[in-house]
Image 1 (tube, one colour):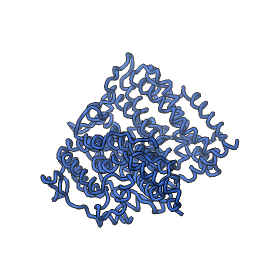
Image 2 (cartoon, chains in turn cyan, blue):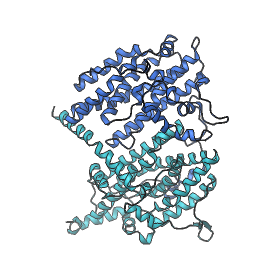
Image 3 (cartoon, each protein chain N blue to C red):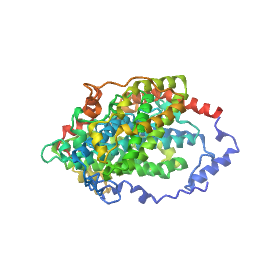
Length: 315
Length: 312
């Protein structure tokens, strides 16, 4: 069934390989191996779903933001995430799958989203911590994707990353402001960092020796760094930022290793990570129920829009 | 295939994250421009009564604050991503209007601002938003209702924006520079809100049987609160008389005219529902609200009130 098995496609495949080797982009109308297309759809969809599910944990604080300025910043940020979902679903559509199909796969539990969003947001400091650590980790993962081999994905990621770095900045700025406030606020920030540090490290995925898809994705130029490389980079960048903030990162093994020129650090609880991946994280059921309800509640509206558009065409 | 990946070299590009500790002017936030009215002429025009100006600004500011809250509850809940983004946008616009108007009220008459503990860093517009009780808010009751389905959101945004746009078009000529500036900016925003909701109004009316049924039900439900928008409160009469405000009664014809156009386009008859009574003759502008407002404020104000000395 796959195109790669018929002889004339050998030439196409060679052309594809040459494009990858030259660091050129593969564009929607170019020939590509089925596996490449499948991997991209899986990755872009997972990324798009993460943006949309990721609106929920922070979105639940919009109505409780403690100042009008913070409310505007948070609302704009969550709105940006909807926008990111939109570009990413559009990038996936260039590979022949519709937004509706992907949404239905998500709701049926057949596609995944980033496990980080299965953690609850329990205080306003979490809005800051998510910006600083979660968006920070996302940027580490995503900046290399601006150079990913598939054109529409790479171009979407350039814009996503610009906005993400703004999001990270607002989170850090919120935490810095709270740290200048009351003792209760400082305690709130520390408690939030204690809860999100390990989940943020999990965002880079399992250790390299347990990551089955990494090698092929790197060969195809979809992925540019391994999980462990990115995790190390994130830790190295976060340590001085934590010091500047005045918070402690909750890892007793965290220390500078002069020889390696990097920080040594402990491992997150990978069993807890796997629980989240399997659907048993603290908020998996809640996030999915929210998304399913919004999608189902909106069905009659989408049907009305389609029916109206059809009437306009036939009128 | 000639789409060479022409983005900066790896190290340079990866540094998007590393610039976090640099406090440069490149970033559009920080603590430097806390005062939303910075650089605006806030002197009170001759012959204008400061408490009247403040009370009037509070009314318009509270309408936006409360409506923004309800619309923002749609974020992550809308029927499609485009609508999620549009509704968030409407909530953001109204939130921005509210911030400016509450700041204007506080600047015109500091006595309207609730007292906070000595040394609280909360700016006056936040004290107004987060430290008043429901009966101190002056928003119209249409804004505060608990959200219904998407048809209810469409009808509510339509009624609210048709009315507010008609008001702001006149308010651009306010003798108060701040109100005139807020209105000039707000007119563009409200024109979008009206356009967005009017398009959906027609779409739902002409879409499926179910969408039409839901739209008509929403209109029937909200219609009794439409006449309240055009009642003239004593504060509005005084603000209009001194040239800083708009008498709602005077925008009724314009607003009704626009609404009739939308109803015609959608082939929807004007409802016949009667206006909703108040309590002892008092309604939203008098601080007499329905039950949902105090619950909304309990949520909106929870974090701010738990930390009256907090820095945000």
